[in-house]
Image (spheres, one colour):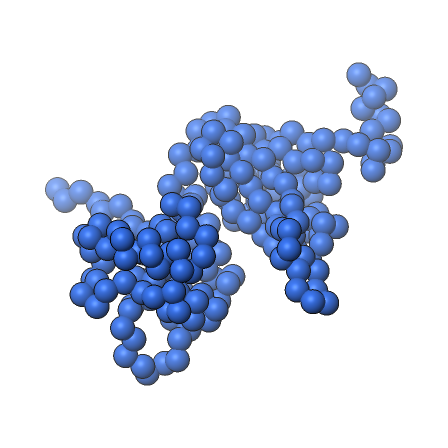
Length: 212
């Protein structure tokens, strides 16, 4: 009986459409751009130039599973492709792949927290604020959701939780995430929660102090 093939990185991006100008015969297929870029970033490359250099230097390895008869993409190709991609679809595909490769064991601690990215704001715009889920034992970010500001974490956290496979895990969140809806979303995923309580919820804080 044939062994069922495990899905590859490329399989998780099948629903992502090539947003480049239709009808043109592109030198580099979308799958080549995506696979080399994702692996390049996973290996520490932080710019399109660095990703392009990495793909070229590792072309022999990439050529084992990609058709690289026309070489590897240039930094300009990476930029054009990623500027045109639908970010929400890409994030959904990427999160599905991360969830697949993450070896989440029962009791794994998944820390959810929000941070503002320094120097990410443009003229007249707020800096990017990301809510991330960090799997501590794996050393892996499982997913991220961008918000306009820190106060929107309360609405972003349930969206992030919904996208993750958390069964058997322990989810930790600071006082911003101490909300009934968030606790319910975690338990519905089959996970446990550890939520901080501070004076921003004075009644609950007082009741807990009196209980203990």
